Amino acid sequence: MPGKKPNRIAPGDLLKSDVLRDVTRLALEPITIDTPLMYYLDDGSHFERVAHWEVRTKIKIVRSPPVQRELAALGASVPSFFELEKVLRRVSSPGLDNAVHDELVRHDFSAEYTRRTLTSVGLKEPSEILSAEFAARFEPPEDQLKNLNEATLEFLLEERKSAIVSFQNDIASRKTDIETWNRHRSSWNSRTFDYLTTMQRPLLAVSEQLLKLFRKELDALTAEQRRRATAAQ
Image 1 (spheres, rainbow, N blue to C red):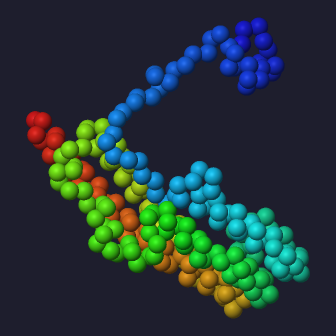
Image 2 (spheres, rainbow, N blue to C red; image 1 turned 60 degrees about the vertical axis):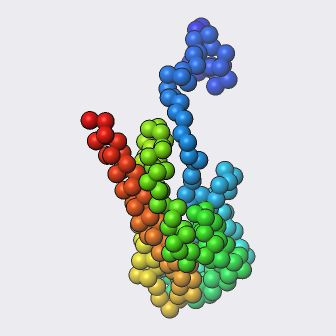
Image 3 (cartoon, one colour; image 1 turned 180 degrees about the vertical axis):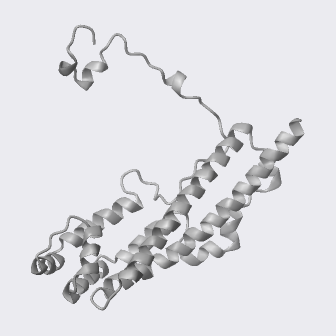
């Protein structure tokens, strides 16, 4: 912005600058793929993904009158459900345990969280993950692999590698939560921690099976890439 002091420049001024240049074509390389984009562990909405719903609902639980009353009796104040869990770990308060558990039940948290998470990967029930029909989605036929253009093959390879990392992280996170609840479980927090553990176990199994399926599909895509490289030599 020639002639204008830096501390007087607003973001909108930059759009009016004579030296601003559109470098989109230099920064991005357009490719054409012949397969639809896929998104995993995401409900497809840009406005409320599974994690968004979870955080929003947990904040409601923290702020609910029954939970607030029990926290006030303990002289505690928490900004999040994570901090609420920490209070449950260290303070002997069956009243707080009952209040949190009852709020989870009132919001039908387990059923809704499970439904949203399963829907994000195209499932209605956890058991469907073991069906041959679902597994077939990750077993591209040989002729289909051969008909993929180079850009699509490269894209699918990177997408599957990314999905594998995502599910590895997802599995590690769920295992950590379950281990934490089990380690800190006691007579004064058992209702809440048992509820959360029971909710996560079937979803952990789903993620573990999905990880296996993605690895199997990646192996098929990698084999096709090697076949093409050998044929080109």
